[in-house]
Length: 136
Figure (tube, rainbow, N blue to C red):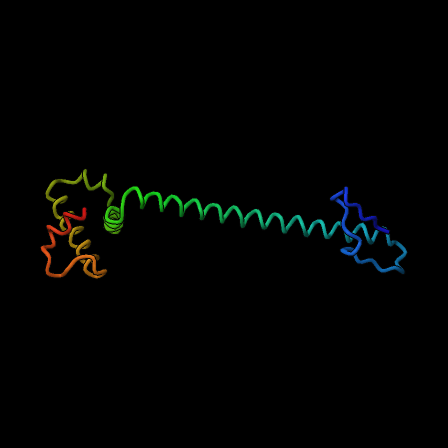
């Protein structure tokens, strides 16, 4: 017979453990069943902890991205993505010779114009160099 105590949280409710009444070792059967139930609960808790940890990591990454976006603004984020696609960073761009920097800056400006025109952010008839410079 299993005693259900509300003060001791380590005991399981009698209804959660199923034991055959004809069993000669009913106490051992009940103890074994309770032990298996507790092991299953521990595995569930471990899995839940892993899910919470993964969710927390994803949330932290999202918050970091949003903070960067708000701090830098959409144009700077777009510029960084374009440079990254070219295999560059702002720092590596500054280390290049002035001629190469000018060519890359021109290519970046062109990509930004194309992006803005594709997303209706820049009229097609506008002077592209002046419009982009206002946005940057």
